[in-house]
Length: 312
Image 1 (cartoon, rainbow, N blue to C red):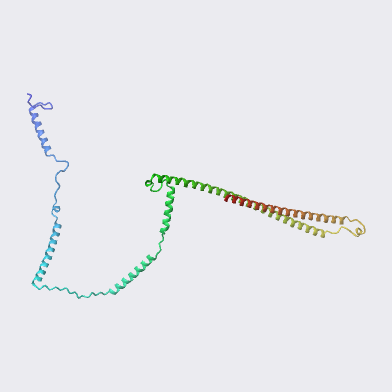
Image 2: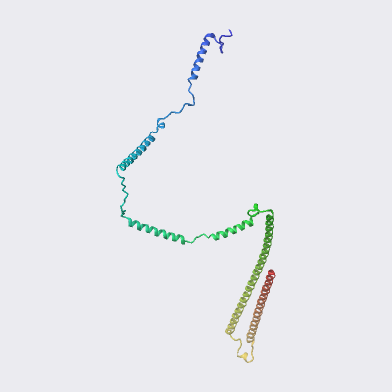
């Protein structure tokens, strides 16, 4: 019983189930054996034109045919030489003739002349770039780089003593540069102060000159106005009729005449006062001008003393 077929699924007849399972398994094995692979692992297909290179064979045959022909010709020549006494025709009396030789010679001469002129121009042409100036600029640039750099060029090759000497030199140069910069700053400050003082003095001079000119113009205008007023008064006095009669001449009333005389005296006194005022103004202007000149001289002397002290 234990050796009988035991199906996986329950069945009515074990004999028939065994037969069916066996046939199904045989079919499965046939399918597995006859299954085609998904990847083609067979050898590639061989082509005839790749194995037999007909073009190459044809070229080789042609080359061999040429060699054979040349060999045949050489054999014929050798046979003729062997049969005869070996005469050699090595004479060549042919003269070269050309129809355009002269033209070609002329063209050659023309080209050679042009080439010579071009060569002369190239040799005589002066260069636009100055190599010496480049060298000077490069030396300056090296100096600037050395002054800016923290370490000198080739500092890794220097010894300890040389490095210490270089550091001391750099410190001394820095001190000298700082002292020079301080001196320059002081000089620039002094120059700026001098310029400011000179500008102030020039402005004062211009103002004083303008004031003097204005005073002179005003005095001239007053004089002109006074002269006009005097002329008008004289003309009016001439045009007015005399205020006296024969009776006045004989000892009568002389009030009109006395009035005119009093007016003339007052007018003359006014003119004298105006003249004295104009003289006083002119004298004051002269004194102010002289004072300005003295102050300018004193300032110039003071600036000269300061420059001498600065230079010392």
